[in-house]
Amino acid sequence: MAMTMHVDIVSAEQEIFSGTAEMVLAPAAMGEVGIMPRHTQMLTPLKPGEVRVTKEGGEQEFFYVSGGIMEVQPHVVTVLSDTAVRATDLDEAAAMEAKKDAEQAMKDRDSEMDYAKAEAELAQAVAQLRMIKKVRKNLGS
Amino acid sequence: MASGKEIRTQIKSIKNTQKITRAMEMVAASKMRKAQDRMQASRPYANKMHNVIHHLAYAHPEYQHPYLLQRENPQRIGYIIISSDRGLCGGLNNNLFKETLADMRQWRDQGCEIDLCTIGQKSSQFFKRFGSMKAQATHLGDAPGIADLIGTVKVMLDAYDNGEIDRLFIVYNEFVNTMTQKPIVEQLMPVVPAKEEKELAYHWDYIYEPDAKVVLDGLMVRYIESLVYQGVVENIACEMAARMVAMKSASDNAGDLIGDLELAYNKARQAAITQELSEIVAGAAAV
Image 1 (cartoon, helix red, strand yellow):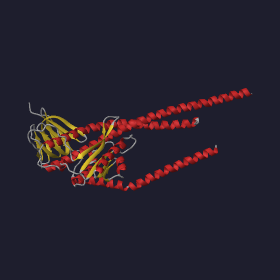
Image 2: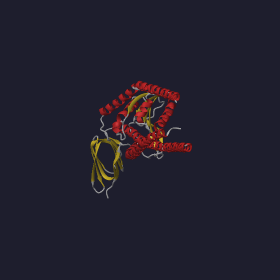
Image 3: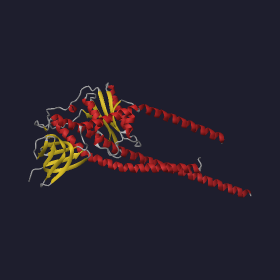
Image 4: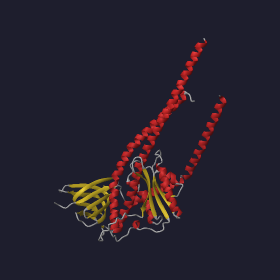
């Protein structure tokens, strides 16, 4: 019987594959790599592409990954797949967006204060009205 | 005593409120189940990521990543605070904020300054008065993707890289069970790898392709992101559970109120009938 190893393919939002395999082919950053059992420890980023898993008995399964990281231990292969499209400038843009949001919120602080003040005034006015109504009712009856 | 008609309108309005709270309870229950599923689904990734980081602590890499190096005498502290977008979920957010403020006070007493990053409408409203807010993300919805968080997390990671903050904490609610949610303040950076007792007897290291720095940079960023994502997903499950419980007790309270009011209404009605009868009888006797 051929030697096997455990293979896990996971993304942040779900588990994609978990099982034993004879070989894994993955699109590593420096080119396609084939991993067989007892491979030495390795860490490498993955490029977008397909991961091919040869399961026990020679049956093959294909998985598309949009990039990620692969860790190889002698008997365990872990593919941490990305769900988001990653690129440095895209990340940068997202970061800028988050920063801008925060600044906007800090700026809105004043208007929020006004809102709180207005709310307090409204509550006071309502209480006064209620008081007046009550007095009127008492006078009327 | 209020008249019959007044009580009847009151009962009607409370019944309407009860309908709303009951509907919200059911919506929250079904959403909670979905959120729990998502929490389960994201767990393998977090676990595997954790394993890899754990292995790294055993390996002897030629390149020490800055996230793994402890920094002495922190000057500025960063917090990523995860809360819900909406209210009506009991004391969930307030308990979390209280815990956070207590933790912040400790650091402030040591003379540290604080930078914030808020995820969720409630925390951004609450904390914008407190410290300098570096980044925020709101309206992520019930099923946020990791893509929604990349930018927010990157702001804090950049601040750490540039030495603007020396520690980074994450604050979120841990889902214990439907009734219990626990506010958690956890250190994200520098990474504290859980080292176990057994040390491997021999030295080994990974093969890094293309080189250690590139690989570890990518890995660490993803690790932190996955932790934050896990926190967000867990917090959503907490929010739904808390809302379900809050709405259930609101419906129950409404039921109690209606019971009391109905009793008062019946009493008033009976009193009116009795009075009318006695008037008729008295009138008949007078004739």
